[in-house]
Image (cartoon, rainbow, N blue to C red):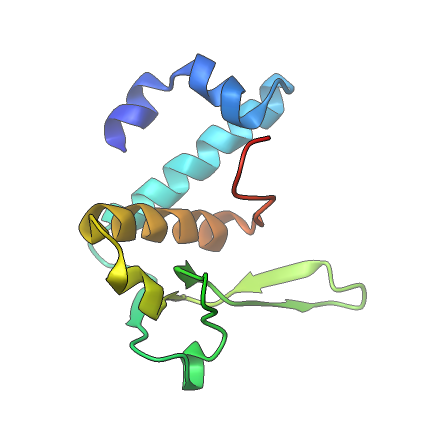
Length: 126
């Protein structure tokens, strides 16, 4: 991840995010860096919850869900978004091949949500 940030392949960036404004592209890089810093920080401000079953705090683990960060909104218009500090790894995460790599990338993905408040737009290119 450090190499990906350091070299920042603009061709791959455009492939996945499309063409945009320089400000928007810079914001994506800032979000990437913030999540990367959170992943490697010594005194973490987040916690990992390993969910062996989809019950209790892990009840929203679906059959296709690897992990998630929950959030809530406040404000009269619901515009203030707050992320919780727990990354919940769902049971599916532990049944994957190459799970060490996939869990690490999944945790990074969830840290992007936690650190920047961005949502998912889809998981496949068409």
